[in-house]
Length: 393
Image (tube, rainbow, N blue to C red; front, side):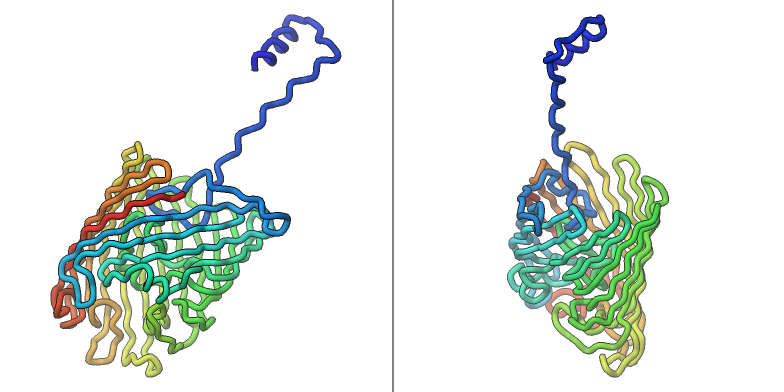
């Protein structure tokens, strides 16, 4: 820099430069931070902006390696038989490998995980991993022929809902009551297209991990301006399927589901209200004597205080329809039941380290005896206090 300044001063003064003096080479620019698009971080935690990078040759290209490791602890009231009044566990122990450049891209996720979830019993990470999506829960390849169009094939993250699958991705540690109606991971193909302020996606997949490729989804998202986005998502099973496993609840795997999601950012605030409607058909094949539906509304929000501190919270309401006497499916706490929840999650992040606490409360009404909380399933409220801490490397 000093030599450059002297040369410029000489030029301004009209002095001639020696012919043999070469022009100084510009200093190399510092590499720009690489934003990892997967896993999606929709909450107040941020992924590592400088992930490890490995050159894997001409075919696999530059691979970026990130990961999430976190411990989890929870205390709750009115635990049901078989659930824990208090528990500690490794919530996430996962590595992500991805290529985000060029026409051919890929993503692979490996490890163990739990899925803490409001209003449902906690299952430790080892049996949860085995019972759901396995130690490779998401693996897909992506073809990107243009900046506006791409195709993904493999085990994909869902398009449905406002909350993602893994705890560190979201505002809150536990997913909410509306998330309980949604799927998490599906196997299939997805097409993505962007045109101006509009983003579209369509997917043919196996729904709630049923291995029956009969689900169709569509998404349209409109970026109104830099601070406001409106998204509509619709999907459902195109035929009745009878698969029933822990990862594939038979009623939910035959539903139709619709989301309307609005996101507003203003200074330290992120505000995300959304609506959800689901419908499970009447069918003797799946044991439903009448159609059952749910309607849900939620507000997710976070205020960033700065210096790594933020305060996210969530408020939800969900209701279901139908009568058990008429054979309606139980989609909540008995056919025709209702529930609301409140969750607040003070959060701190310093570089790749994070820690957060959570207080949540669920209240149900018009329930079926034996289908709610407590040792007999008749308690209608549940309070939880949870902690999560770890690193996003």
